[in-house]
Image (cartoon, rainbow, N blue to C red; front, side, top):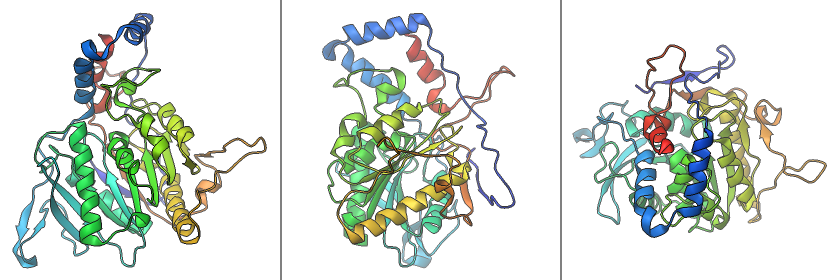
Length: 382
């Protein structure tokens, strides 16, 4: 079960030690098999099989869905989700994608907001589990927020595939423009883990976006499984190839102790970004617990405020803080810069929105993230 809780860091300081982790140790024979993969794999012989492997590890829609969608007669037949609190500032929508699926989305309105955030969630959550987080983020960041379920997730029809997720985010983007009048210059795209795939795909086609946020992002699907040196045609979510086509400021947030998607994924994407914003490497942060850290919401709010001011003043790129050697200087967890904004904010936390925890049968074995349970380990051993 996914549990949300709001933490007041003035009275309830967090213990951000991850409650779950997966120990991934590559043996010499695994490294040898990896070298064989690099040298002998061919698009024709291995493409279908390997892309299928990547796709199978990528999508774990909650079963059963955590929510339902019904018509609300008191609001003229508009939709509502009965499992979550009814709110006047939230619209529940059903959107038709260009691939023929019908996806569910929610739009959270903040009074007099000057920006809208389009949130692509992780691979093992749905809107019912994300709803409270969306409401809290909208309030803390003072922005409108739209979240949506991928095809095959929650009450969205169809199957979860890479191509379907691209069509899904396009449908959400189209709705924001046509129904809510959102301009590209007002739009921030936010992708968490696997959600970084559709986020960067859309961002690579929209040159006038306000900003992009990458939360525990992946370089590509296969690179989560193998440390590949090249990109194969049959790989999925080739973020490493698309990040350079994003013109707007990019914020990367990644935990240094992420054992599902190594922090090197986030760092390389940040290095490849055109308009680098000060990244946040959360010291000790895992894959699914970054919201437990006070600097998460503070740095995110600082980013939203900065890109808003920059967009109003100039079309130039956001500065990157430099050290005395002229090198990029990231914001580390616990630094003064990370605590300058939002010191009075309550934080939003979730046990896991990209993973499903499974209790280990061994007392001394740490719990595993759903994204790297035996599904992934089995493919690594092959």
